[in-house]
Amino acid sequence: MPEFEYTVKRTKRKSIAIIVTKKGEVVVRAPYVLTDEFIAGYVDTKREWVKKHLDKIRMILEAQARHTAETVRFLGKQYPVLEENREDACFDGKRVHTPRGEGKKAALIKWYRSEAAEILSERVAVFEEEMGVEAAAVKVSNATTRWGSCSSKGNLNFSWKLMMAGGREIDYVVVHELAHLKHMDHSKDFWKEVGTVLPHYKEAENTLKELSEKLKEENWEK
Image 1: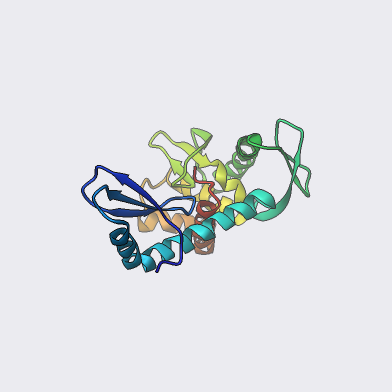
Image 2: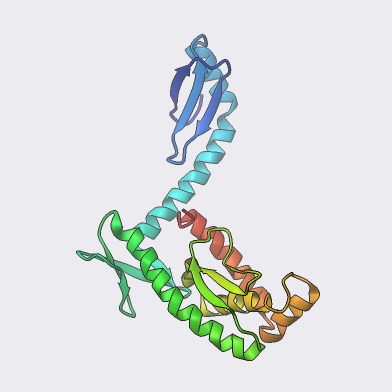
């Protein structure tokens, strides 16, 4: 028999199906005509599949709980969160102060965006001079699938989530997008340009991939 509980929802559908929700609930959707014994047998055949998905969701939920209760990332480091009776979020050098309750995440994002606007503008200016290029504009975005982008008009867009990355990773994304002002592709010349400025950019690239996965687990992709 299955090692998990499940809920049966009978409908007018003609086939039986089993789903695992984002909350870790197992739901079986079945036609009215199927007996409880048949449904139990079907669930038993899907036991390993369900257990695999439950384990994955459990890991995600645990990561979200740790993130919510304990710390947040800022410039590559983890800082404790102090919830207070306030409307905004701020950083005192040791802790991140946030509102209590439902407004916490929105306040954090607003704070991240503010920090991103200042820090990224500064880093872009540094590398513009070094690389001999000039961006038309620097903007902070809510992008979820990329850290940065460069438009054909020379506008640079950076995700506010970059504020969770370290300085090396931030510089890599800045240099990457500035290099597109010379090469609007990912040709050998493009990567040569990036490598000239940041010889060890591959390390930063790999770290960003790992961070991206962690942020998905912590529910920052929404």
